[in-house]
Amino acid sequence: MGTYTDFFAILATGALLYAINRRRKPSLPLPPGPKGLPLVGNLFQIPSALQWIKYHEWSTELNTDIIHLQAAGTHIIVLDKYEAAVDLLETRSSLYSGRPRMVMIMELMGWDYNFALTDYGDYWRKHRRLAHQSMQATAIKQYRPHLAQATRNLLKRLLDDRNDENLIPHLRQFAAETILSVAYGIQIQQENDPYVELAEGANHGAIIAVVPGAFLVDAIPVLKYVPAWFPGASFKRKAREWYNMTMAMVEVPYADAKRRIESGNPTVSILQTCLQKIEAGEKDDAFTEDVLRNTLGALYSAGSDTSISAIGSCILGLLEHPEVLKKAQMQIDSVVKPGHLPDLDDEPSLPYITAIVKETLRWREVTPIAVPHALSTDDEYKGYRIPAGAIIIANEWAMLHDKNVYADPFEFKPDRFIDPETGKLDYSRARDPGHACFGFGRRICPGRFIASESLWLSVASIIATFDIEKAKEKVTLPSGEEVERTVELTHEYDSGLAK
Image 1 (cartoon, rainbow, N blue to C red):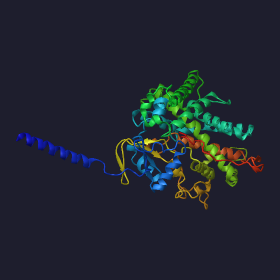
Image 2 (image 1 turned 120 degrees about the horizontal axis):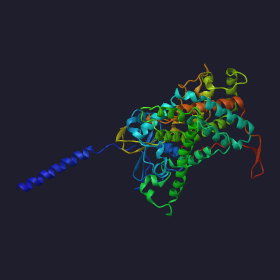
Image 3 (image 1 turned 135 degrees about the horizontal axis):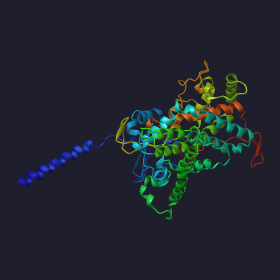
Image 4 (image 1 turned 180 degrees about the vertical axis):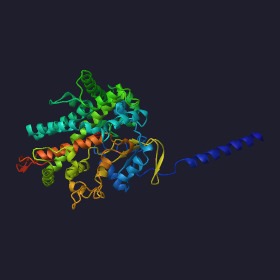
């Protein structure tokens, strides 16, 4: 009898536990998303280029500002609206500040040094703290002479070389010169500078590898153990090449700049300022040479390409809209003394220049999708279940081209930010694009202040110095007809992120 009693007691207990467990299981649905295939889900539906456009198309088709994708078991949540990004990435930043596991770039290419890509934790906090203290709005004022010198050097190169095919190399040198002088105190003058080539080579691979879905090894991590010689393992050979470039980018400028400081020839820079704190016995454990070297490497990589994209896009916008250029030049002429270049002290008096910069960042965003976040624990949003470990992607391109926020979103219109009666900036007319340009929450870009100042100064100086016109030349079509050459607008980072 006792045996049967025990049996039924165990059976009843098991049934009760099953019922409790079943009730605890999440009953909420996942956010809507395109139907995928068994096992692999949407893995092969996510395009390798222009992902942000496809994400937005899915959001529009499903009439939702949050979509769910599944790639070989990995949950991906795409936020298509600014409000959704704020609700999750900022309001709930304690849950959404992680980074997903990125095998290709972090474990194979050596980018685990870069705190912008590392998971939320002590390593990130130390590096972020040093970066924040070094580049907050008040701290960067001491580096304004570096920004001014790099800008003037750019103007001289543009004046000496009118070949528009050399524009991008000139902008690349300007960007590298700016970040190298601010971060390390290194001054570069020559064309094809090795420091420029270091950043260009390392960033090329990172831009491709950081995009979710770009490499199968990110969805199936065990592939990282496949030998490089194995058929189909070309990603391993690419990773090995990019790893060497990454290490050189982090170590070479740091070592060169430190030797210059030790030889008694220092230049004001973040490196010099932080080394002085370290030598003085700074108690903050973020101020160590390892943290400093890694942080400067992250700044160097982030600052080298973003300025190129932004200034190039601005020039394209001015080419298409000469009336904007003329209006900006008239404002500069009314504020800046003859024979002088605009400087950052003139910014409050030149709101139209600021509007052009803001519109550039909105119209041709540097990063169409933000670097992915990761959710640390299960969450609920708008009646949907968001599982722990999900990759969270903010579709910045969609946010900055939202027709409900920006009228004619694909048109270059700086006046959208200007009050027509006062001539002053008015973000109640159109939201400041800074809301999406630099990331969200605790992962917002720490270099945004110096990036904004550098971009403003370079744009203002180019507008003050040059007339920007389309080349007056004809192109012969296969039919024999001659037409005027046009500017084709293509996104520089069609296959990846700029940051």
